[in-house]
Image 1 (spheres, rainbow, N blue to C red):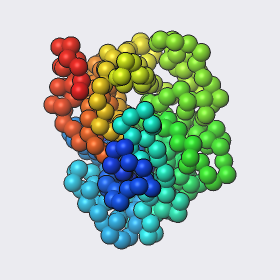
Image 2: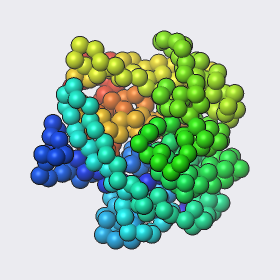
Image 3: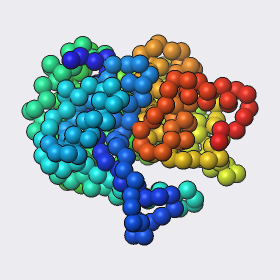
Amino acid sequence: MSHGITCLGEMLLRLSTQPGQRIEQSTSLQIFYGGAELNTAILLSRLGHRVGFASALPHNALGKGAMQNLAQHRIDTSHVILSGEKMGLYFTEVSPSIRPTEVIYDRSQSAFATVDPSLYDWGRMLQGTQWLHWSGITPAVSSRAAQVVNDAVTTAAKLGIPISADLNLRSKLWQYGVQPSQVMPALLSHCTSLIGDLDALEAYYGFRPRADGVEYILQAWNFLKKEIPSLQRLAMTKRSDENGALVYQATMIDGQGIYRSNAYHLYQVIDRIGSGDAFTAGIIHGALQKMSGQDCISFATACGVCKHSIAGDQPIMELSDIAGIQQRLSTGKIIR
């Protein structure tokens, strides 16, 4: 089956404490399905796109439950390999206060980490695809996962398919004997759209813009265009604390101009995990809908903001929710 968008990555089980509890004092954990590329795929599907998910899941009840979750969101699973017995896990200690949320990974030897890259026939899988999306988390999982990404992006580039990547640096995951800077530049060299932050840019390329305001994204763009001639757009989010509020704002550059969203002041955050994935989905949606640069960054930022109000990883929202976020900001009301 061909789809408009193919997302590549690992689907995970997230086991989460109640807000404010440490793992060592918890007697029960909430279960959510998640994963960066999966979260993006879900929102794109909910926005009306035909989406397929390429991954690997264990051939057991956990894998079956994950497949059912994908079907629930109308995501095609024909490119999910069933192999192995372990599903990737991660644990979160959710903190609603000054203590940051902590993440513990258990992804070693998972079905996706150990999958045979030759099982993916990318030439066939990408026929009819209009867009391929992946993130920097995936090649961090294992050398095999990095090979899967390499095979996917090189095939997509040969077919002329637009490719997006969320830079997504996860330092805890790079445990198989290589540094991110040894792997990521070659994989990113095929991209047409990048979403990310300054820390990832520095880890992958050793480059960090020395500027404030919108100048930082212009410096990043000028650097990346030399590394990635195919690059068409770069979007970055910034978060800061201001008088007890999380201030969320984003900027995008596309060679035609620099576009900045309004700043959202979030006085209550339910769960910020997955907000970047929702933002990424908004950028992809805007690009496919041929939105103007300003409309695209405004829409994507509202997607990211809305996710802060939803528990779990997945952006369970509709187009009306996103429009409502934008409308409430325009009326001057606080997003609570």
